[in-house]
Every structure is written in structure tokens, then in C-alpha cells.
Length: 243
Image 1 (cartoon, rainbow, N blue to C red):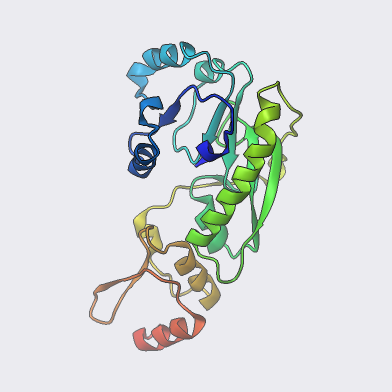
Image 2: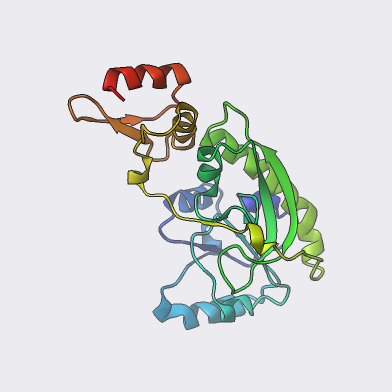
């Protein structure tokens, strides 16, 4: 959690997507639930903005947030809003980019700190990025932990500067930009026309607590893969399933 990186910086409030139960449980365990506001629906944006404004915020910090901010909300933060993004920008904008990087066979990703604007998803200028290696045996769990560590380091370094005023940031090169879609459980079905290594990457990316890669056995039963498959196991399954 980015709250671990605040140090002596005063927290005005925590805004949570009410659908993110894991975040709520973390806040309860760490006695931070009294600081919480919930992301509003469109009919209650005005009330939400008044609540935020009443807390006199200086800067907003986003991490792993699935909702889009709107212009009048961003304008309430005199020093802007920054996002700690778990992917390399601009190549990995959008949702589930940690999983997409593994699925695509990348050997490197990044924790990226950037300003938020109201132009689009993950499009604001980049303040700094920290590269994170994707090892051959990394899963979504281990890569998530490595990205979280890199992100905490970025915030510890930059937050003291950010609360003093705007810092230099470079525009993203839109020529390399791509927005990745949110993955659905059904997207985990193994496509046996893909190379073995690509299938192995899929299973690495979708282990528990994510829904998991899956296939159907000879009897038509759905088999969920909750651990990475080795290349030998994939070859054996191809033979067994006639793929």
C-alpha cells in the first residue's frame, strides 16, 4: 500500500472504490478506516467534491485505482494528482498491465510515477520510472511484490518534493502508446494454437488469487490451472488432448 510510503506527510483522507474489498480489509487491519471516503456515482459527485475540498488537500496520489477522475475533482488539488502506475508508459497504459506484461513475454516492466490529466487513461507527463526485471520464473504474485517495492521507493523519494510544488515531468511519446483492456475470467482460456512459451506465460500471469488459466479436458470438463505450467507439462497436455 502507498500509505506505507507517506512518512511524516499528513494524510487528508483515503478514497476507495467500494468494490475493492481487499483494500478495505487492509485499512481495517491498520486502523485507517476512519480516513476513508468512497468513490461516488455520478449523481453524488458534487457532494464528494465538497467533502474533498473541506479537507484542504495539497496533492492527490493514486495507486491501483480502477476509476477515472474528472476535471473538477483534479482541480481541487493545487499541486496536482499523481498516479503510481504498475507498468511501463506509454506502452502499457490501461488495466491489468502487470498480467499483460507477463503474457506478452516481456523481460522488463516498470513502476511509473506520472501526473494525472483529464485527457485519457494514464496519459499524463512522467515524473520518474523505476525498471523492474521480469524473470523467467516470476508469477503475477512475485512481480506484483517487486513492482510494489519499486513504487514505494519512488514515492519515498518524490513525495517530499511533490508537496513543495510541481516538479519537471516529460510528456509521453504517443507514437509508442497502447491501452490494454481489462481482462475477464473467460480470457484465461488456453489457446492451443499459441506457442508453448506463450501458454506458459499465460499460466504465470493468472495464478491464484486471479481466476486462473483454464482448458477443457477430453470429457469436456473445465480444468483451472492455478500454478504455472512447465513447458514439459504443456507438451504432455497437448499430446493428451490431441492439440
